[in-house]
Length: 466
Image (cartoon, rainbow, N blue to C red; front, side):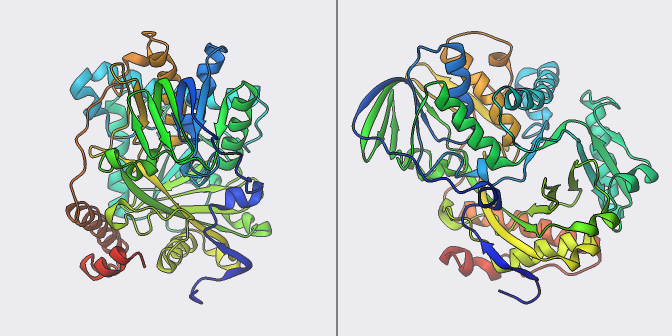
């Protein structure tokens, strides 16, 4: 590892995530042992699958609900994300309004805001201690170009019904009182966000659904989804409804290989900062983002660290996924550089853990939820990084769709949304890396620096997985 980044003596790269390292890495449960029949079979034990199971069993306790998981509950993005329970839509309201009208898009946004409180409420009811603090989210601009985008975001939000109570510009004094970001020229704040510890939430949710009688079979990869059927190496589950809740791992299922692109995101976490917090502030524990093209996201953890994330190597050729989350050296360096640029005092600390995970990205960057009654196959996902909250809404929506109930949720504009598949390789790889190369270069120009190596110079590394 490069000496450019100071590492803790016990530094870990990969091994799922710091969240699981700090709360305890689970031992996977028993796999499926033979064929079985169920009312609902759910593929994937992340937030989407577990919330769907939870709401179905709460509504109809007699249903036999089975969850099939390749590793252990929460192994994917649900146990690796930045801990943002945020109310923003995946995609733009314009795209939802194009098919369902502006009022439907506004209603969708309000339901998303309410979903934050729904997660917090269920966590309390089920005794899930996930370090939840609803302190909102602050988004900063650190140069003139970012400031222009910040004001554009504010104007766009007003256009779509966000009031001053939903999103507002911070006065300089209040911005500095909240948290002191070096070089910040402006900031906006929204109350519609809560901090969580992702692994604690997903583990608690898994325990809650087991108490309700849901069967979770771990170490059980699903190799094919067919009408009313989920096939595994250890047996076949036949069910009236089969729900695909695989998000960033969807491309591993051959028939869905081009449905959602597995986009990589990476994180580092510092050692506990102790007295360094005096120069940073951050007493409200709000989440922190910025207005760069190649954006970052961060939280102040319950034990006094900064968990800091952003895009590393965004996409591996052929939609491959690095399961264990090992993070490239230059990604760790880039995240450390961004972190210490925003908070210079953190240079006195060290990096304790680095990890990566994948999120699902549809071709139009808008999430979908659907149930095909002819085949019994349903799905939800394509959250593009907004999954902590959106998965809860997906679970409630899939409940209503499975039960055949027409509700406010089943009328939302993401239900049944049709999205074309991603291009074949190498077009997929070239397109994604070209886009992010432009983002990096644009951000470098705005900071007055130089861009990183061009996309073509990284082709061999990405294709070989280095």
